[in-house]
Image (cartoon, rainbow, N blue to C red; front, side, top):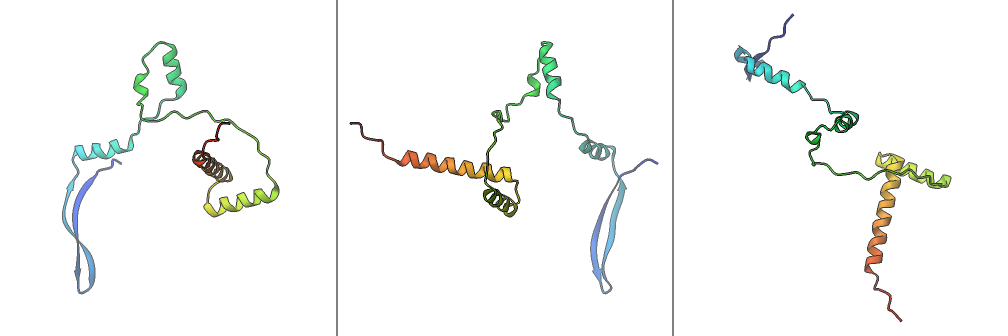
Length: 130
């Protein structure tokens, strides 16, 4: 069974029995509007980094894949940190309260502490030379 699109205009009217819908006009949708509806569903799949790398290795121009609209992320390094059990409980409570992960709480608190440190060291007068 083939789908057909229709377009319609209706009004919501009211009488002594309550609200009702009044059909003003109804027509078959045009091919153009059918194509519009179909095109909204199609999404180009992003090209995998491996595919771009293979093209670059072959000497192909890969500049079309880069828009310069983003920013370069610095590489992530994993670290291990030991916390006491009560401190972990505090972090977990904060995470639950903020509805974010424990890792997000830790990163946020470290960022705030570093920012405060930079502000505090910038305000201190320079040590006098002897």
